[in-house]
Length: 272
Image (cartoon, rainbow, N blue to C red):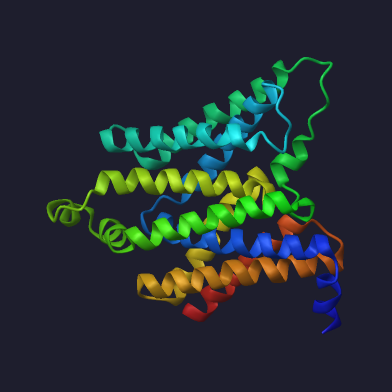
């Protein structure tokens, strides 16, 4: 019990645990639809696009903590652009995502290089790998608010989104606005990724979306059960990973992702 109770006595750990649980559950719920649609690469692409948006904010002399507000519309625009290219049918999903995220990431590197030398040095490592232990109360409120709004959107569109996910052609014939739902899912994924960057960074945030959903797909058959299992894995993996990183004194974001990865391989063994 001391292994669990001791970290809970620290205020920064309590904020990190709450934030990790919220982000883990939210990304997992979104990830179920992303994975079932065969769009797992989209999370990685939008994470790299978020780097371009954050770098643009830094170029505009906005502090790193507030640069995510510039990254938000930037990443949503990239997500909608990917959706538009996909709907034209000219490129496959992985190709379109690869092009957009490569250009966005290159723009981010260019924007950081264009900053005047007299400005404060940017800690690129914190952007790439996150710092969940440095999450403040304001960050926690923002993450919680976005999670509540995203959960409400998913609840209101659940049945139609599920229909469009498993049989888009029949859903279109039935009057379901498949195109609008596709754009909504992409935009929602972009928002969730930008908000989650603070916790595990640009490099690892896509794992929060893909791994719990992939593990849940091995353990559950129905979409609702799959979502519940994915959320449980996301929340539990964040909690265990944070506690492990605290006691081992290692990087929190990487430990969380490794915990989620271990859960996936365990699910793979159980499925066999």
